[in-house]
Length: 283
Ligand code: 13P
Ligand code: ZN
Ligand code: NA
Image (cartoon, rainbow, N blue to C red; front, side, top):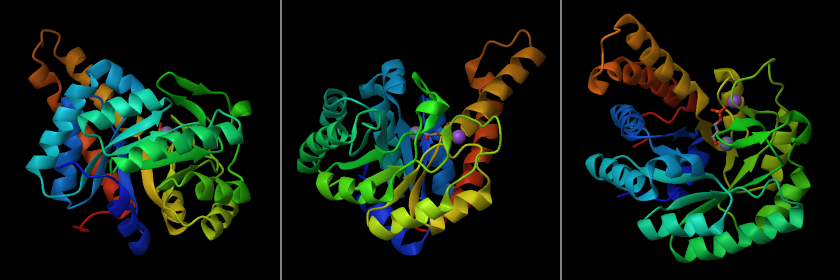
């Protein structure tokens, strides 16, 4: 069955690796990710943004993820990525989702705390783990667009207070990563991350990992990031291969055929990212 992210993240924290969280969109992306994770004996998080659930339906996505979790004996979590409303989270929890991010990072500090506390209270009664974000990532994720000038880094002291007052299970930090790819090389603030790790005991979450080098992600893992979010770097090979196949085979119309090379290209990146996270052979 689908699990929450409590145990898998605490084990990752203890053993100094990270659980990869891959953004999914449909049956094919879920299949690719869980099959690769199974082969590599890696725990895995399937992440869906509100846009994904709007597209696929909460019930459909839940059912596909549930089927995957029944089929394979590795820990698989379905996780609500960047959700902003308690109502949406409740809907998924009622369908059996066990892990959720409540993203109140656009709210002022006290409002963020109030919203997160509400979600934590509801979620914990249902055995659901909660991730929240303090600081604000730049870049674009679905409809969520944050201009660089509106992004800001996580303050370590505020992070400690935030975690203590909200009771969240994990904390997403802003240390210089952004959603999507980077126009110029990102500069990560490792000192800040080290300071956060010193005062925050829950697992930390690295968003925006597409476009960040393996070395830098590993450094973040060493500094307490136990969950690494990857969306864009999976979407690119998938869509590139679909495009290539359809251009090269102008008469093609069978999705089972034109999605096959796309799935294979995506699988290779999933394998790479699992290795980057050092989450293989953990179960
Ligand atoms: P990327 O767009 O860098 O893959 O970020 C993914 C992410 O943070 C999902 O929440
Ligand atoms: Zn994110
Ligand atoms: Na990124």
